[in-house]
Image (tube, rainbow, N blue to C red; front, side):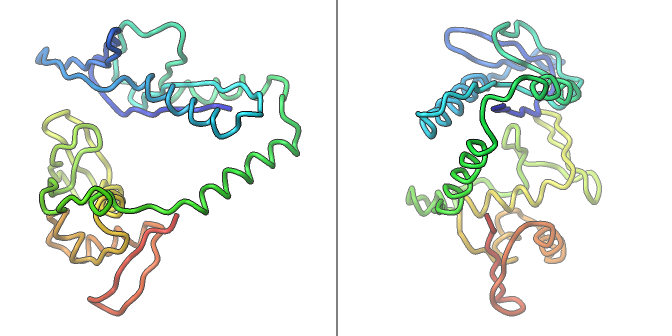
Length: 226
């Protein structure tokens, strides 16, 4: 089983130990630290092992950086760290290895994953933690540093803090609203929290997402489909 952690971070990245950190160094020599993604991988793998305690299946970890402009320093040698273009060849090498699970065992694991997914229900974090949603930062936010994105064109947005460029980040920001604020959102809700004045922009983004809807015209509510 291959577990991958994808980090879309640009700049020069340096791995530090004790405590484990990932530090990004920009052209200005300014440093910013992140939680170590390798630690996140370890937690994910531990969770999978707890789900299948009786199945002895090797779990391979890989940390992937999509941008070829990322420079990596002091990378741990005991982990697989790749750029996106290297991943297909790595997966191909894994596919050439001898199968450990029978087709029946594989199908049983897949079915177990599907059942867990179907039974899982989420409660918006603001409701769960009793947080007033109005104190949350509003706007279309950068997925890397949570700063407000600036719109460059119809589909392209830019972060002035971490210099990330994102294509059409509105749907992913709407997904965050479902997780944080409400299970059902109106277009007006999205406009308010994302600070977007165009109903059409929100409507068009919702049409590209897996959402169900109920109600009529301006009273329509949207609910994300898992």
